[in-house]
Amino acid sequence: MKILILGSGGREHALTWAVLQNPKCDHVIVAPGNAGIEEIAECIALDIENGAAIVEFSKENNIDFVIIGPENPLACGVADDLRAANILCFGPSQAAAQLESSKKFTKEICDAAQAPTARYATFEDPDSAKAYIHQHGAPIVVKADGLAAGKGVVVAMSEQEANDAIDMMFEGSFGAAGARVVIEEFMEGEEASWFILSDGTNVLPIGTAQDHKRAFDGDQGPNTGGMGAYSPAPILTDSVMEAAMDDIIKPTIAEMKKRGTPYQGVLYAGFMIKEGQARLVEYNCRFGDPECQVLMMRLGGQILDLMLATARETLDQEQVSFADDHAMTIVMAAKGYPGPYNKGTEIKGVSLIPSDSKNMVFHAGTVRADQQLLANGGRVLNITARADSLQSARNIAYQNIQSIDWPEGFYRNDIGWRSLTK
Ligand code: AMP
Ligand code: GLY
Image (tube, rainbow, N blue to C red; front, side):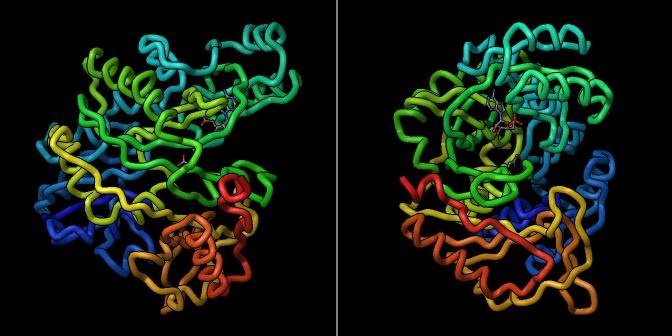
């Protein structure tokens, strides 16, 4: 089987690594990939948001299966283009991807599905938004409706902060994404994520994880795309998951099907958990990054069979075989990230870390030039380990990271603190 994977992050490196372990896979091509992916698969330049170009490439190269990593190609309908051309693909349609690309859409689905989530209202002008904020008071959460690269949410601790967020969004900081805002009740609790495959009808959970969104230790500093993750997330106990499945996930999948826009792909559900009850914070229509790295480390090659069953609508015939293991990934980012940072700084020592089923360095923003490995993005490396306890996985990951010699990089020293200090 010849597989095309779209994307260039740590998520896509982990997906490539896992898919390659499945004997069904003969050849993987990744567009555009990165320096780590290049070591295990063929990388090509292709505009991953250009559906016509991807269809043409897939036909010319006899691609059997396309796996779409990031949200942008999904939001612009690349999965629809592939399906229209009869090319098997993993990822929801543009209509179904609205579960990530429009917060208002997700809230309406939650209403129809009666899924527990924060109370909300949507606004298309700043004055009525501010009147609502004044009426409800802080803390309150202001969200740009559309995709804003993870930066469109302001958890405002004061009314002033909420009003400033409204001004910023309506002044166009997020372009069209901010032309409509959703204002939500602030939910207290602990956050965790659940990843569930759906073929449009059936659902199959494939693991839980917790991310670390803030840049610095102690959950300080600005929000990032994620500075580290681990799986499983102990707060998502069997009983919390059972209730979330019945009250949130299944009704969402049923509602999407009822509307004629079945959800086919991985549903990434972000929950706020308090007193053993989960409420939905958000859906994403793709794997999390860096959550995917820990999930792939735990699932290995079986993910390809599960993704194929998702695309072929035969998920009811699949089971996941879970080992009693734990995985952790620590993100190394360029100093300055998520603000401005330098590119092109040299990274040494990655090859000193073993690459096997227990230790992996998944690359994100890296390139190779004249034999040197150079940083080429904000988040750059994911030092990932798997072991029989979270503490051991953590020890291995932090020990491995010592081998990396990259003075321009930084990482958090407290990944996993929530679960390890309990
Ligand atoms: P989102 O992009 O919707 O996941 O929001 C980003 C982050 O903002 C979430 O991971 C939460 O930490 C926080 N957040 C979003 N909505 C709420 C809410 N209603 N109450 C509390 N925190 C929230
Ligand atoms: N790590 C958060 C995300 O992928 O959205």
